[in-house]
Length: 288
Image: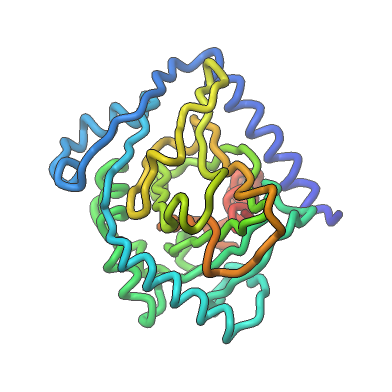
């Protein structure tokens, strides 16, 4: 294991333990699920949303995206994977869109089995992606009280960059261990879009969250339909993906399985801070 990977893994363990301890003891997390229609979400009072999300509420926004749109993107990702070999690229200027297969890669900061795609929004060819998911970036902007969304066009040397992160968990055991994610002003909440149909693309397993106080899993995958989005504080609420159809043979086919689309902004390799562990953890998100 390289020194970098050793530091990432150990910093992550420290980070997780600190927040696990805080959410169980010192912080009053009132975890509950609030179901919203798209109309309700679009008109929801942003100050109330900020208070609720920071207090531990999870939003389940119903049918925010159409199945047709998400299936179109899935076909695009499948074609992309056929034309480009799987490989990882460091987040520096010139970094291309890419995809990679993480089959329990030993140096990942969170262990998992998934096929991951990264599409960077500074590229003109990806402006449709930006436009299609702009509502979630705008919601995050309001939560953080940012004056604008100029960072969505950033390149890596600007510091923060924005992307569409796509995770495909294959039938036959695709999963992601329980974890927490870093919080910052560009990513004040996590927004996870379900892009598969339960009972059709997969039958068992899927996304869950855990109540930090009771330690119970409280999210039911069948209630989370294709086109829905869940929104929550990713640094306060442990979450993961239970194995997908784990009794079936492993099948990396992109035609089925569990898809998650996550529009987000992250630090690039150019940001250097005194808190080196924070920088490494943010970049380590790319290993999910």
